[in-house]
Length: 205
Image 1 (cartoon, rainbow, N blue to C red):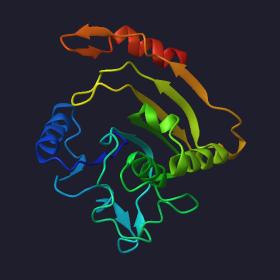
Image 2: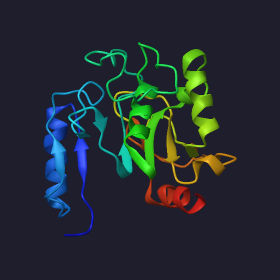
Image 3: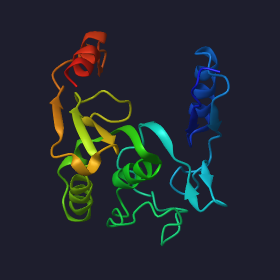
Image 4: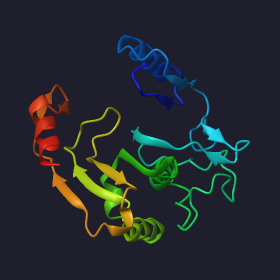
């Protein structure tokens, strides 16, 4: 009814329940939230063509688990959904680029995404360096926003928002980079982005 359909997938059952409640509270009770239990990489909930292709979307936002060590569990190789086609397969003990490539494959030809990943995706070498170079050559990365350290529960490492835009990607000649690591408020033993910090990032972008 609002001209927008929302889909989501989350492995943790408690987080799935919170997400469904959140959708109801924000008047999006028709949102389709895949019940927890399945890894998004091993068993994507939204597919087409008899489960051989990923359903594609206009927008994707994601906060996948940082540097997941067992991301290949349940994933078939060669990959059923061709998420790594044209790229090296991400290293078995680090799933950051597996999730990023999954999000990119889940976008339509003009789709846009924002994915939160650890800073290591910006500089790690070997296979990840090769994947990163391939993404840059294709012009998929529109922007990178460096965030403060210690924002997320369970880890103190700094993260970055990788902004993906497939529209006119082949004509893109640069990446807009923002260092937003200094704008935050101490909140107990964590750091927190204030409204003014978020607005500054958005306005700058």
